[in-house]
Length: 220
Image 1 (cartoon, rainbow, N blue to C red):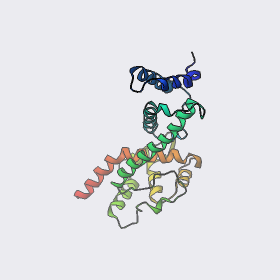
Image 2: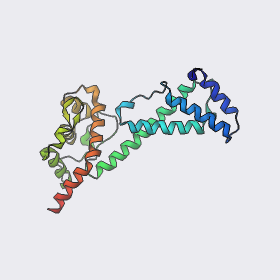
Image 3: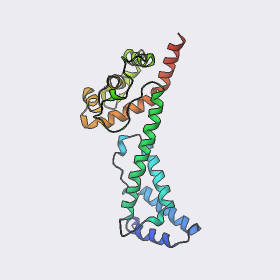
């Protein structure tokens, strides 16, 4: 039996079962399991962010579906369409949470930059510039520029050595928008989200290195 052809019928049968009953719970779990195994789930922009962002969105979507399955209306959409709409909203929420976590992390390093998808907005409008009066910003810029351990230059977008963290970070600190940053490191401008995602992930991974360096500077 093709589960994809019977999802609507199965969900309607679930809606007839008493809420809180064991039979209903089992039936819901089976539908959820089939949805997870299905190739019908789609989320635009999924691969522009770390996998945990999508995983969180999917988890929240399936939880919502299990709790709100009575809201499904077959006269409006197929089950997979209904699920994908929920997934789209949950994915947007997961992106906001992910960006917020990164923003808070970067603020500790005085690397507070916009984390949205408006790649034509100059980062200089919100970022602490290297020529600003902030000593902390100056130290961060110096650390990235000098790259004493060669760590930043070695870390790059897969298959694109020019698109390394050092080059990207310095361009970001200069206030260039993501499209210009992407072109400057030798990648097509439509790959801006790949460069952006790489940058944020790298900032998060390199945060301990920045903290250690800044602590040493503070102690001197």
